[in-house]
Amino acid sequence: MTEEQKRVIIESGKNYFRTSIIPNHIKNLQKLRLKDFDVNPFLINYLAAFLCGDTAPQSMAKALVYPRILGTSVNTSFGQNIQIFISQLAQVAGCASGIDGIDIEFIDALDGRKKYCQCKAGSQTINKDDVDTILGHFKRLIGKARLDRIPLQMDDMIVGVLYGERISANYKTIATTYPVYCGAEFWEHITGDKTFYYQLAKAFGEVVEEDGINGSSLILQKVEDIAMEITEKGGL
Image (cartoon, rainbow, N blue to C red):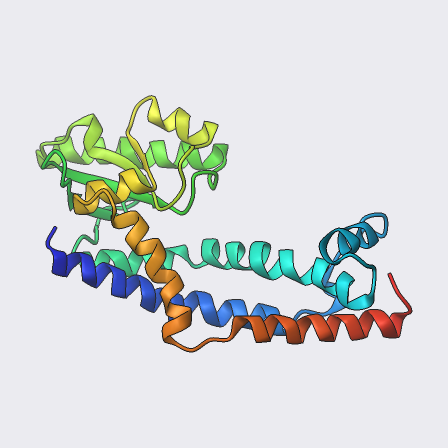
């Protein structure tokens, strides 16, 4: 893959964050209310004191808001919108597939063979039913290859995991028959560049600075809002 093609993928990834991830992340932050939290009364005071050194309403609000908006919320948004990113990847890389159950097709930069790839978000994101679905897609592709005389080898059908390192047991089940490329390894097979995965990850963070988004201010404002609700309620 050329440097220009890699640049286009990175810019597409940035656009994905601008149009899908960041707006949803900010929306989820701004709509948060105290009632949205399943507060454990046996833990909240401890967590507030552990984080801030006291159990003031603002400290409790931080203990609630920080993990939600910096963890659960954005991870959920990324997973729910991952098909958008995959579609954009297929478009800019010119590797969209017309085969049912196959997300992208590309020439492997390492072995030069055409790969038929089903993409998944992360290294822990499939369940047992997903395993059967993926294996079924590959089985049907094998049948199609025989009919259409496509020169297909077993290791030409792969699962590409966009991020992560250690794959789950469900992925390992698939890997007994078909390759599962995860994180940096997956992106190296697409681009031929060992560092591309890290370049792409860094680029996502650059969007915030490039677009002048003050996430810290938005979070602190929400902390104040939640703290006010806690005060009005008389505590937690």
